[in-house]
Amino acid sequence: MPFAAKILAYLGLLPFVGIPVLIFIEQLSPYSGFLYFVKYSAIILSFFGGIHWLDALQNKRANHQLFASMLPSIIAWLALIFLDGNILLGILSISYIGVLMYDKYTLQLGRDIIVEYTFLRVVLTSVVVVCHLLMANI
Image (cartoon, rainbow, N blue to C red; front, side):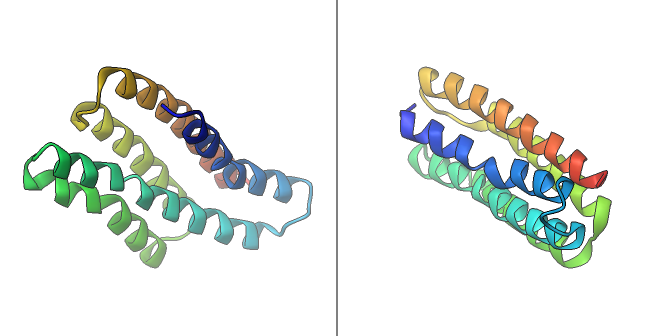
């Protein structure tokens, strides 16, 4: 996996980690911080469907993978519209874990790439879920 991809992935954690820190040190109101956090979370969750779209097209996989690639963005969008508070944070967290599990059992990438990608996703998803738990307790 290219070094730049890893760096960008870890930089993507900055809002997840930074927003709770800014709330804790009283540089951001809990209300505004919550809104910024869940909006960013929904955007990032939507991003994870893209790899399945590419995988399905490149490997001539079943149409169900194309439909599944749209689920993260649909779930994130519906959650933002209809849910609030800790329920919204919980649905987003569960969705991150679900997408990670789907990645692990569905993606057909080269062995070297899939091992690195899965490790990276486990680390990133763990941090993201912990940050969602922090936000639920602020």
